[in-house]
Length: 312
Image (tube, rainbow, N blue to C red; front, top):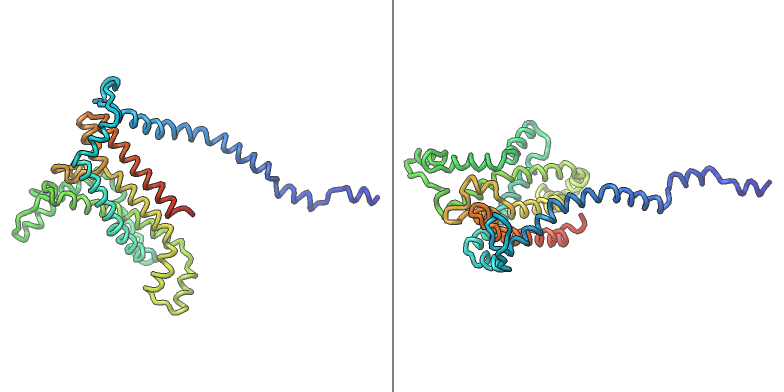
């Protein structure tokens, strides 16, 4: 009788075995999910990312106009020609200026507005949408609008200057002011995106920490410096990443505004690639520019992820 009772499984052991499956079953489930979902993702990634990158790297070794099969192998000459071109370094400098303006003006402006508009008050939603609307507007449309605004004959800025009896400037036609005009549009266009990121982070923040700091006697600047900003560090790092990568890939705003001119003064890396690789049908040369830009972007992304976002 005792032997039969001892050999019978208890209800608790049955429930625990059902509620806590073995490690083998968990691993089998993960393996099954990987087998189902990984091949389609790898196929799409290979078709639309890996193969185009490899194809561009292959074409960069030819002096090719895009017609027929590439046969004139030139090796690394296209890369040498790119690095010896003054316009390339000017475009790279412009990308650096865009990154600098994005980090020093655009992101602080977005953070300041987010701190003002994160709290709920009458009209807050309307103000958020007002500042976010430029980001919703298509880049081509925004560029065409500001091309008219900057027009030295009939634009808005020309009309304002004439009210004061001054000669209207042609901002987009001068090598001294063309890039400045583009930078203003960039800040106007994209600060709303980063503002909404910061607002979402602020609204998801634990308010008890802020209240505790205020109860301990911290002033508003101290709460902002020692509580709010440190809690926003993950969002700030993500916003910086988006700003830098977007700045390196900027193209849609430049083309309707200046097309990279005058005299290549407002070219970015991508517009320089387009003007030389597509418009002039120098496909091998353009492919070399694309490979250089790809290396720069991947190097930044991997380095930034490793040093600043390793725990996220």
